[in-house]
Amino acid sequence: MSESSNSETAKITLGENTYEFPVLTGTEGEKAIDIGKLRSQTGHIVYDEGFANTASCKSEITFIDGDKGRLSYRGIPIEVMAENSTFIETAYLIIYGQLPTRKEMSQFSQKVLRNASLHEAMMHFFDGGFPFTAHPMAILSSLLNSVGCYYPEMVTNQREQDLEHFDDAAALLLSKVRTIAAMAYRMKNGLPLIYPKRDLGYSQNFLHMMFTEPYHEYYPHDDVTKALDLILLLHADHEQNCSTSTVRMVASSGANLFASVSAGVCALWGPLHGGANQRVIQMLMEIHKSGDDGTAYIEAAKQGKTRLMGFGHRVYKTYDPRAKILHGAAEKVLSVVKVKDPLLDIAQRLEEKARSDPYFIERNLYPNVDFYSGIILKAIGMPLDMFTVMFAIGRMPGWIAHWREVASNPKGRIIRPRQVYVGFRTRNYIKMRYRDGETSSDYEQDEHKSFGGGSSENAAAKA
Ligand SMILES: CC(C)(COP(=O)(O)OP(=O)(O)OC[C@H]1O[C@@H](n2cnc3c(N)ncnc32)[C@H](O)[C@@H]1OP(=O)(O)O)[C@@H](O)C(=O)NCCC(=O)NCCS
Image (tube, rainbow, N blue to C red; front, side):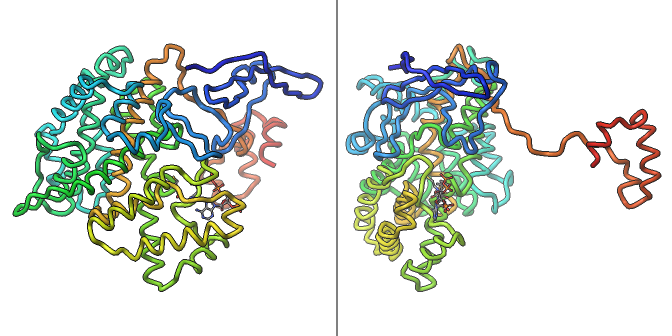
């Protein structure tokens, strides 16, 4: 289950010299040139804007074949997980590397359930600790880090100690991320805070906490619960995306699990990553309102005036397998909640148009996971600003598993990329009184004093 290093090598020629570097082969046949000794041997570094060609680590958690549209968690294809599993069982698989036995599953679920409530002192955060206008992602990120403060034994920033408490910390985060999310929604909407229930499953409990009114207990339809659970399951991990790489980077400094996942939430928030699902619905509503059938929007995207949100992916150069599963699920949920959403028709029309348009075909732009997940979330009553929060709840198992992979690697090093510096060469510090147009001869004199006669290097730097 590890990479193999065979006799294959890659040669790099720089001037007169040729250097050889080992080639690693992943378990799915992916090849990587190991340039770990490049700088020490050649004095050169590599430049790869956006890391599109760079493996930042070895990982055993998730495999993606972007050309074939394949995704698997710990070796099990996503389609198989979607068909047979639940979010909590998938979380176990991702975190611990294998499917749980009946006993392991029951213990894990109980642990998650027992950890659902927040420390009472944390409730004050929802009572004036944030303005009503606060985005739930800001609340989520702050409170995930704050939760750790109540469990000092889990956040020591001493690897061995933090790992000793890993099982508890993992269950606690999986559980409390959902409670914090629901409470953030209730606070923002002026609803009384309610506690999780012991007898409800993970997704059902979340929906109950979200939508229960003081005069009406909400219990979702089974198909609605299943649809949310499926969305969470499909988001559970996606190898080295922006937020997961952020979690790994923070973890690599020795920071604890809570701090690392809190940083992951911030990275996820942006519209090019987790924020895209919210933008998809905004885009569909805009198209609907303008009376466009999608043609004008597609033309604007082709001219670079906007982007077709929910389309394109750094890794998938074909249909994102998660989007395929969610397309079917979206139709089912709409029929269950008996909603005829014109946005689904627009989304389907956009997809048809884009998939027959050379601009999108040539650039391999296909629907990604965000394209249909938003329609489902909207149908089950989720407000727009909670969409990215749903992504964060779903991604929690992945972040936890990646933190553990980093923290338990005895050979792990702090992640610290290099750069190609393209800024100014050495410049002089010009005193304030000369910056606003006093005479240059005064400046020259002053500089002469402060730089001991003004070397040719200073003169060159000034030029
Ligand atoms: C996901 C995404 C950030 C990947 O970005 P990337 O790998 O850096 O790809 P690039 O931005 O280099 O795009 C490559 C080309 O496709 C075009 N392109 C990419 N996504 C596009 C989109 N959604 N709509 C229109 N054009 C798009 C780019 O303009 C570029 O065209 P060019 O070669 O003529 O300059 C990008 O596809 C995107 O912004 N998609 C919309 C946001 C989204 O859905 N994000 C969720 C991802 S799960």
